[in-house]
Image (tube, rainbow, N blue to C red; front, side, top):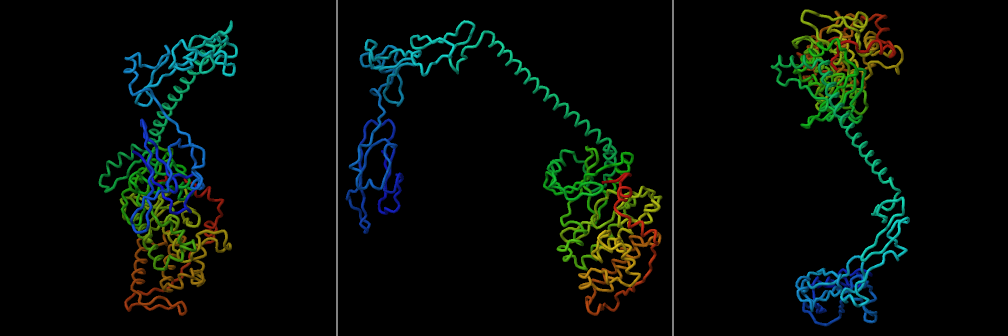
Length: 610
């Protein structure tokens, strides 16, 4: 049984051509059904919940595609022509095998007819391929299954144009003319081709297949050789970059809580999406810095150096080992390196909040960098420099202290980064003679003239950082007047001429303590002494900043911008602004040198841990 139901209560929903239940519905007749009984019943609801048998419907059996519903059919359907009905039929209800047992009732009379059971019940008879006619008639009848002469059908000639078609009983042949060979049939046959041509085609096909195999084989061999070559190259770089030395050093330094990891080149390529440009965090004279994501989800910073001095590889490895042992909250942690590339790659922890340079010189960010935060950043940077100068197993001179190498996390905690220019100082030395290296504007003038590198060189650079924090100006800018281009010279000159408060960032003056600002400026002035021996050590600088920070935390009242006075606790230390300027003309001219000197001054030539 099958059926459907349609609703006719709302004529506005009726759609011409749609017989899906509104005004019209249809149901398929199950297969293998031998007889039909159509029943149409109309159910009318009179509003009380009871139904009435009043009939208002019309049903019929017909071929689905032959009827297209129209809203007009409600009035004139009975006047339409009849809808055609398509029937599948078969002989009896026996299978072919059972029917053939009784030759008298078996109806496939033609000798070459075939029997099939297409509907699962009964059978039908068919003429075989190459014959046409009525398979239910015996061979004596002219309309029985008769051979088809394919060659007479000129419109659908089954043979090639050069072949001769010959009809056979139930089939046909195509004969190629002299000088030709093949089956003569149209595709999918081979047709007719000149003798020998097929051999040429076979040879050509064989050659093509051979060449394809040779090409694939050569590509496979080339790929294998390239992989081996790449593997050997990685091994060469690994040894060349001191990988064996580093492995030995790491085994000898098992006391590290988290020893440095030696990453593979493939790991870092995957972490940086093959060093895609969207992963670049910054570029400088020493290399490019990328953001990477390791398989465990940890975000890291990957530094790819431009060049490395192969003669100083052992020194580089020693620095690697020392840097991995640095455990200080204000130093960016070195996690490991990759030595399988031409120049080593260094992997650091990722700091989320950008560089101090951005926070000072970006208008949107600088407004968030309060005086308290600036003093905190200065103290933490000093603590980190003091730590690497005095508290590591071998003293480390950073040699490139600047605001772009001081990173800030989400809590504005300062972290020194980029030890690419740093040098280790042996225990029995206080200074090193090196090729001058650093960044103009931050470069120690004494170091520039003498090539004698000491911890006081970092002190000078730190003084420039403090000057940047106080003034909001860049360390070196060609956009300023000539006398103000070098911030260190301009800052010290302003103190000498008692113009300090004129060059201090307005935002700091509005919220900061004037006396504290002067004290911090005085510390910067001492750091910017031309002679290194006149500068304080980073340990002394740290103590002075600690005292100021403690004083700032215990202040009862912040500065009044109108009176520029401050009220302090009775026992809080007080400081006076001492003016002690010691800067020579030759030193000034050296530091203010234009950017054309960068190629000579900044170019790295010695061992640099990038």
